[in-house]
Image (cartoon, rainbow, N blue to C red; front, side):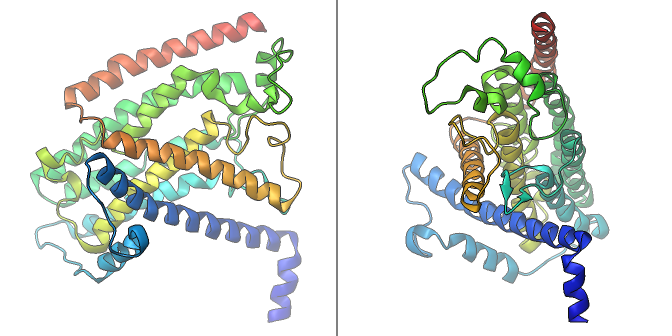
Length: 368
């Protein structure tokens, strides 16, 4: 039996399954680690801004606090209220958590490592897949509000669905200029159309260490309007301040997760932070050059294991910076009113995204 398995593992299909499983395990482990310690970073950041100490008892500097929180969630009584719709009540937390994990499957978090592409699923329509999967997360929130048979969770679920519809449209239109320039729908931006845009600028000398061509994936420099729209939509899609109207502790006492406790509540909590990780990874890929840096030699596929690990580290550093920015904004900005949230989505971002598409297309047509 064992020799047969070893022989199968040496085949092309066997290696595809084996390396795919290893990549899935690696990505899942990293995402869960970042989710756990993003909570610690948020608590320490909030304490710093509010002139408090924050978690400091469990381990040095409170670094083991996420472990204590996880143990507490597992050990607390898993209580199901008698009045809820039980099937939907149990299903909702899983639906909230799963889409964020599926989204990272198309994120190129590195170039090559040992000859393997550092992406789980190298799809040529990755961005369409992402938008399709991300939109499923709201079903869990709506189901949680419906299953609770309580007015506050129901209002939170309805707010979440309206918020998603409002900002999903702007988000989808905001990325169109990127692919007009790049000439493809792959998540790692293609460079053929980008090189045409940069024609005539390659003579610019930014120094020996800086390669202008290494900036071909840094769309934040050439599509800043798209970046601003996508950044705002990132806050709205992840239900983070100042767009956390579905939870609104002061108004809805927590919104859709009011009736949840124990591990089911923890799944909602983890789902929010996993969505932050997925959104930050997508923004890094689309606007911040992914695993590349504007340094000569660092934007090429890795030839060694060390270079491959460096690329992964660069990607994770950019992603963690965006996550920290989301955390910082939560404790610095007040929450929008609901009419302000809708006005911003429908009357500001959607017309701005349409104008951005027209201007980008016109510029590309003039330069062609």
